[in-house]
Length: 575
Image 1 (cartoon, rainbow, N blue to C red):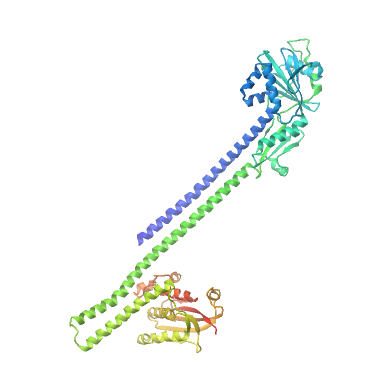
Image 2: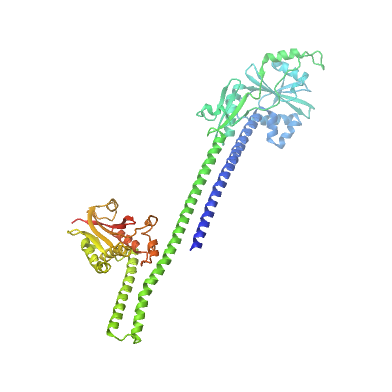
């Protein structure tokens, strides 16, 4: 059995070590999952924002439209003017805000021709017909500043975008001049595109802010607390292009000394409000939890807590498993001792009966006195064997709770009968007996055989464990019914009082470390083993089962080196 205990101890250590390792691994896994969740949200957010930026560029810049569509039939847009015109028509057709452009012009640098967009095609027009075009066209010819995309804000409340595009058929550059309605751009195009591009990102708040005027142009949720954006998760310019217009230097152009660049710049700045800075319109994004880190931390904590709860359930299960395993080991030990005790209790009388019968049958015993002696011995051992068998049959019956016959009995009368049964053994061993029984009847519902067995068991224990203190006290008193009995669902409604039988001895007592287990089956105390006191280890468990079946209680009221007191508590039936 020591091997079994060591195996269970090793198994317990291994199980709890594995549980500790699982907790550590789960913590590391949760931290890793937090990083992965942050990366996942960041990537999704980055994709949505990139899509929004590209969508705005497609709406504003013709070249971005050509680049992002990847349509083969638009390849001709860079070869022939007709192909360019068709692609331009497609670009304008996909606009979701038809009032975005106040006017659109195309200027051919080699042909020195200006075309205006009519809505379906280009129509040649004069540069001088629009006052604002003259200084721009001259600057295109005589300045190197317009070799890339430019954007500028005009005093007319418009935004001007200048895009150079090389056309193979004319072997020259075409310049697209887009005059954008600023109000339409800020309050229609931006909100519409933002709604379309970020509608899948429901975990985030979005807003577009003009940093020059500190004006919020768009909010995905007006109920979002403003302080959320004090430290946004993501912030970037909505319009990204090459450097804005920079008119330098202010001197005569060496190519054409008749053109005064300063004069052109002066005319140009008369119509320009300011170069349009790409950092002016800022898209700010914040997670609905307050920040991306807070959201990922919250998700990590939820995952970690749920994992810990699962591990706790596993841990509790493991603890219960170990406890039950240890109980099973103890039960197996007690059962083995019980079997040994039963074997001894049965073999001893059988051996005596067999030996006496063998001597008589062999003719060894011939005198009448010896025959009578052996006959009494066989009768005594037969009764002992019968009593042992009946005792264990009663235990089996009580364990299943079947075949108990509850009838109304006088508990005082039952107790007196049991005391009468023990008078001879007490007298032979010089026991001091003290009894205190009431004169009136004490009615209870019970199975007579079972109750007598319970009382007999306690008196027998007091008798066997008395050692040198040969004293037994038996009392029966009527007391207020204990709360445990009055709350019992099977207790009769007219139960108001309890009958308490107390049986005391002057033995050496029950050690404190054994008091909690004395009512468990197959348990025998240290004193019983040391002094080789007869017993099976099921007596007190049998008493407990009997009292439970009678809605009563068995209690160890006190135990000390000077003696022990047990109490049997019965509900009393009022007439």
